[in-house]
Figure 1 (tube, rainbow, N blue to C red):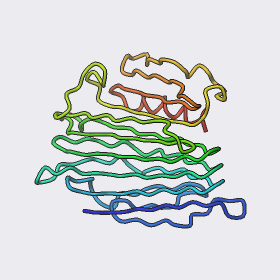
Figure 2 (cartoon, rainbow, N blue to C red):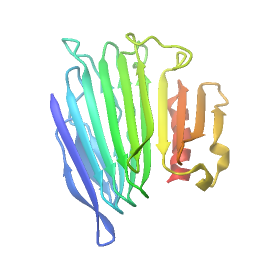
Figure 3 (tube, rainbow, N blue to C red):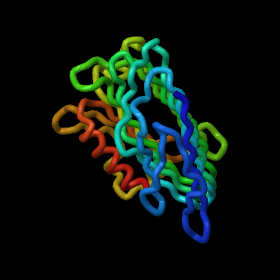
Figure 4 (tube, rainbow, N blue to C red):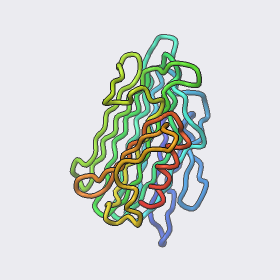
Length: 245
């Protein structure tokens, strides 16, 4: 299956207007608020062999919150082909984009690649969250690759490439057996945050969660969370969403 979704938000009369809002199953965008869009899955998957593309454009001064209504489950195809979701986003000068989807779940025997490329103009702001769960309950994970590249003011700013699954043996430097990975990247400077206690290393009292929140070069921060409890991980990223927006 091939599917493309495109969302364009522009500033008009001092308000954000959704100039383009179109998609194909399983990428169906629906406006849910003045500055908010949810993606609705119109079909199961992604399934092995699927080629999905999401294009996001936030014009100068516009604001967009983009979420999904449910987690996506990457499923194996009959021929073992890889599925792929390519996300390309641009944020114009003075614009704001919060990309906060529900997690991707790597079901057993799947082969899936999430590839994101983001361009952030000078003076624009970004919140970019990615969450992955490795295997459904009681099953081993499939192969999952998460690639993210963000340019800020036309210069490289953040890049991550993580591969997990049977074809990518795990090690202590990656997940050390954890069942989930969550990452939040924000353009907010550490010095601008009202609660500096978020910076550094955080451990959940139950021991099921480990998180690091660190500043990025040329401004901004990245939070990385690993563990087995998605609810606990979400508490960390949601606190940062609140303080960094």
